[in-house]
Length: 528
Image 1 (cartoon, rainbow, N blue to C red):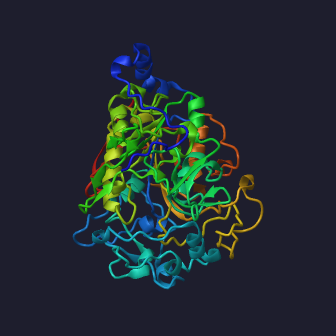
Image 2 (cartoon, helix red, strand yellow):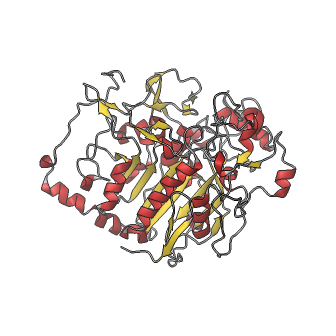
Image 3 (cartoon, rainbow, N blue to C red):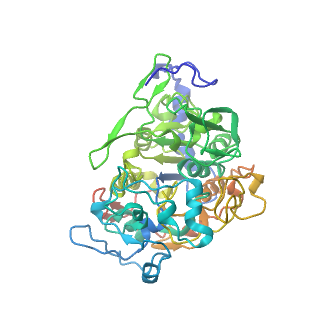
């Protein structure tokens, strides 16, 4: 990587503090962080929220036939837990036989876990839904065999789905905890709008004074619809970078003195340039033996905002300061999460982002890579004493374009040249939230799971939610108020129906095999 001495007007000299320079007073206060997180007033018994935000999955792509798996020879057999299993709005026999698309939905085997990445841009996704007919997936978002793994299916691959013999861990989590079959991408489009909506309910408010490069296809009328990198990040691509104005949940949490952090694989620099700017060239292998760059800048939402950014990827000054406002400014490497958990310094709110090799994104990761990450994180959390007051929320950033048969509810119109849901230049009609265009939503249906001692057991929530519902849950639990400025948190459905706070209904821990996704053990959980 070449030296970049003028990354941004807010770039600051690198100051790496030694532990000897950290005052005993600050260290003592930080070591009390877990006690603080456990005693801060909350609306619910939940004192710790861990959001695991994965990549590129529609609901049908993972749960189309839940809880009925093919159980073919050579694949891990999925068995119902013995608990009553409610039905989901999936692909029944009628949907298979009379599907309106040019290719019918079909099962992908466990051996087909690596696939092409499908088209999941803002406009093509709207065109695929075709005003509610849901019949143009192959033609608009299907990707052919140009240098990727399509198993000879060409654009028809977009209609493929997995069952519990491949996404075994997730089906087992659904059996023992709570899931939704009516949750949506807040807007149409790829990763960046999804991750911004997660933390702010807002992909609008592009700061035109802090952009770089050609923003064609990335921004429409000051709203992010593509995947530009964050302006306040040394490891972004200056060919297309943007900053955002306004607030995010990190601002709200910091103002309320609530500990929090975003933890992402590959965030720790692989090296530094002579001027101290970060280089992010760490690679990690997937299960197929392919090494991928670990860090993706446009998967890191807080770097788009000056107030919550850590442009030079500075480390926390100590494990005790993780979750607090030191030089890392709440932005960390994934290893810092495990260090904090081991030290019983788990922040009140943690967002986890896997390395690219384990984030489940088609094209360079797979459901089996993703399963290793999910099982590893959940097993570690369930073995910790903080588990008794923790809720893990598992969600995805976008659908990757994979087929889903449910037309999303139209809660926010948009009439830009990039819209095409209800006609050329049109996504419904009327005035959008905050008067902000370029946020046609809701977008495609996505999986959503809540794993917690307080989650309902083997429960399927049918109420309408979206990515900003996670934001709303955090806002409400810690009495933070709303973001404002046209954020989707104003209209987001609540996650409360997935919990039972009257008592602890759950049987305890459910430890999963990272390799097979099968349940290794169940038992009583430790408590704080």
